[in-house]
Image (cartoon, rainbow, N blue to C red; front, top):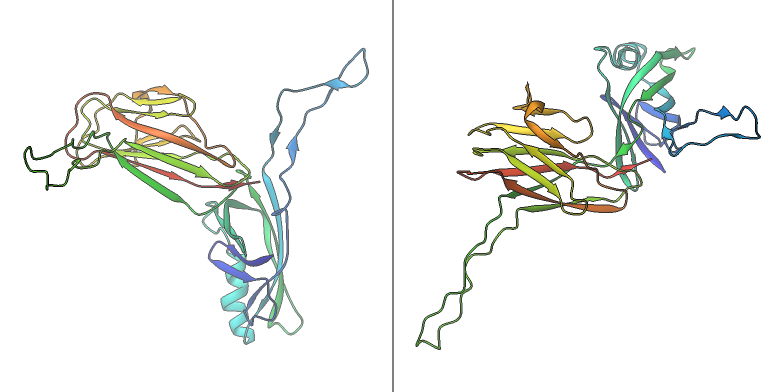
Length: 286
């Protein structure tokens, strides 16, 4: 059951008795699957058509309708009508979220056509209708992070000879330099990795479940961060400089629906300080 719909900065309540000024009437396309893209090529001299090994989803199309209700004519016009009409005024795609009893799921949307506002005869209320396109049709859960340092063997067994009353001490625990990413949804998702130095010869990340490797053969100096987006293939230093030329192995991998991936973090050569790798990942649903 839909509870709240967030369209950019505006929050619409699906409960008309809640007393809110923004009310959801209908949301089409959110719970349905995005359309499958199927190109049918008929067999010229036989029945049927040529098949395909795999088909892909189209963008998600949403149609939203709701109501605006102000305390007065002036308040309705200044606070509600204008705000809805100004959705995506800067042209930049925005966050579109739906809250249900199962949690919040979010996609990135862009307005298609006009954000239509039709005032009621009393001019205090209005109906609103808008269509949105989500180029990435997956609905994502909240972002999660997992962080690790480089592998560390830790301490060893220590004991005092001739002192049987002394308890054995196994030393500090080691660190495998691994993180495990979980996707509890129905669609594969693609993590983003951020690595900070100092790493003198770069680093590599290995998917221990599939063997895929992301190898970065560039220096990661103190105070800098290298990010790798496995969905887009974008590699940036400090979120600005393109560093894709240093990615000598680009075996990008996803986290499968209902599955996990364990990722190993290693230095290619020497390092100093406390290099870290942080993975940001989400569950995704169709």
